[in-house]
Image (cartoon, rainbow, N blue to C red):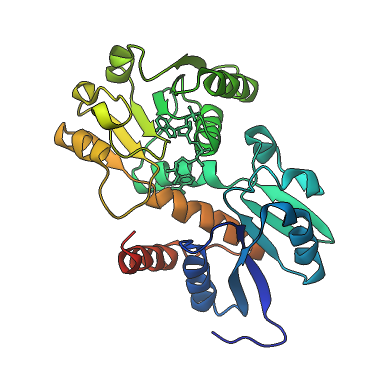
Length: 288
Ligand code: NAP
């Protein structure tokens, strides 16, 4: 990588950032494309988010990614927010263009692209069940609702958070039927009757020690996804695979949200396979 007076900067705002894989993924893409660009980590304290965004303008960054815990906190300081990010209520990518900070959310598109491109899955008319109602669940469910799924069951510990997500989904698409339950309620039949099941919680274990998931109801007609992208296999995906279901972890979502951010900043098609190799190698080396 060459750094000189013409190097264009992008980066990631978050805290902590020690384990972020984004610099590796993006710098591999810049290298491959022969772009004089560089992606750097930008750790920020909680009360410094406004100053950090001023810094992006002052140093003429092309843009930044935003990660936990600032995806919502950046919203008041942006000049424009794309419609999808507005619906999700969170931004993970900012473009600095013509003196304006423009916010996007590429997580939902990342998940949708992983499903459609890597699995060849068409979500139209499908019945979806999602565990979780946090930021990742919001972006994933809205993108699936807009893409035409027919039913969305939200299973979440906090009923209030699930109900708030239900309202957001209904505003994005009036065609989708939405139901909310807690993990302790009986959702076994709904799970068995779902085409696509997604774990959007950070919980790995289930049963007595974790989240209640009636895994015995999983079957071979289903696609089961876990948004966690650790290289260690998820117990949920193991159970699903043992019952013949098709499984997908969160690496594809991570990859395609990065590819979309790359395209927003550079205006060029992202070298997805180069980015995938860099991501897999980094995960392997970090043993995450
Ligand atoms: P978040 O906003 O903090 O939401 C966490 C969700 O998990 C909430 O619905 C929460 O329920 C639920 N939860 C947390 N601990 C729980 C427990 N012990 N038992 C039951 N439910 C629990 O987090 P997020 O950003 O949505 O991230 C969720 C997961 O997705 C993380 O593992 C993250 O790594 C992954 N993710 C992956 C990608 C990717 O690119 N692959 C992108 C984003 C996120 P309550 O509402 O009841 O608290």
